[in-house]
Length: 116
Ligand code: HEC
Image 1 (cartoon, rainbow, N blue to C red):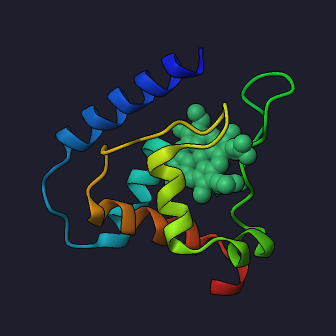
Image 2: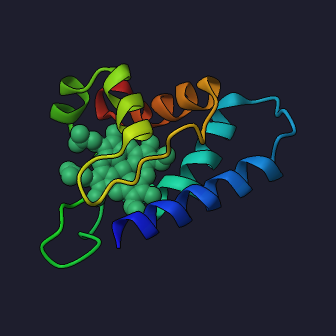
């Protein structure tokens, strides 16, 4: 079941990445768009997390929680994106380029209330 979700998510992400390969002037807008189209359906547009995907399942993290921001290094976040976590967070593997991974980390960091 989670394998299916992960596979379709990766396919969706790939299609999305392929369809918008045009370089854009503003990287942060790209990062926002990438997060919004790939991550937000679970993590929320505002990164506050959401309901568990299934009953009893883990809830997506609240990225606006300072404890989360302190506890995770940029590498931790990239590793989670690549390898996934538990039954809820799909592994994206090689879906994203290193630049896109950096952009996603930047977007996750932007939810930190202390970064504002
Ligand atoms: C299918 C839903 C889903 C999608 C899509 C998704 N996530 Fe997650 N994510 C989760 C869930 C659920 C957890 C909590 C997993 C757990 O604690 O077992 C999580 C956890 C995380 C964590 C914290 C890892 C940890 O160790 O607690 C990070 C960082 C993260 N996601 C980033 C992202 C990013 C960036 C994207 C987009 C590239 C993304 N996620 C896409 C569901 C999702």
